[in-house]
Image (cartoon, rainbow, N blue to C red; front, side, top):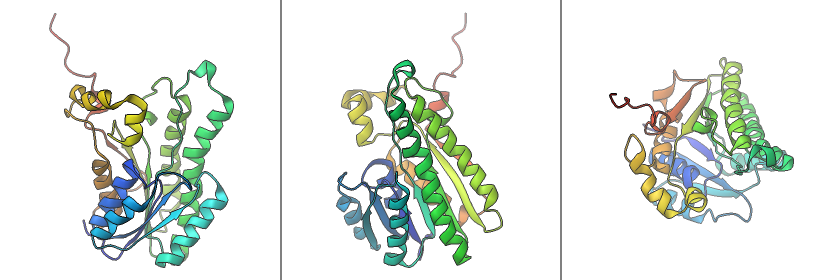
Length: 258
């Protein structure tokens, strides 16, 4: 996969899956602008690793939950690099609470931070791509939660399911502009956020119970993103690529004989 000469923008790239996508896309040859929330995890580690691969990079903090911040991010990326060929949209906002007790404001934040943020970033970037007239790649990082209604994650599940449908709908409208729009559904990935949520012991042992015998890594998702950003995926659009090591089928083994 050769992305030499391409310019990518990756949101949520300070750590975890976003960082994995930024690094694998850079490893494939693209220059990468990385984004994170102001006051959040420092972006310098991601930038340093991209530069060590011989690629150009820039760090642009912005809160992509807000339209004005998305506008600023896209504009500053174009100012810094001249254009955007690839967008990896990776914002998310979860929260694990029982449905009956779920705070309505937290639910709204979950939808805004995942689904609405994805809409803003995709629309603004797609407008730029259409104006340039050279096509482009838009990749949403979704989740197997879009397919599996895990409790107690009602807002996250709904937002990710909506994100997958949003991607398909956008893809249909951008056929003529040759802008590929796809989703990646990660399974259980070993990220800092998962270790905070579940603890090191659960993460370290959890992979033993999965079909592939391990948790996924941010690099696994990054390699999928690099593929979808490449010419090898030119004929793929409006698709959701599950990258989960068989997680979704972990309870589907042959039953014991009776």
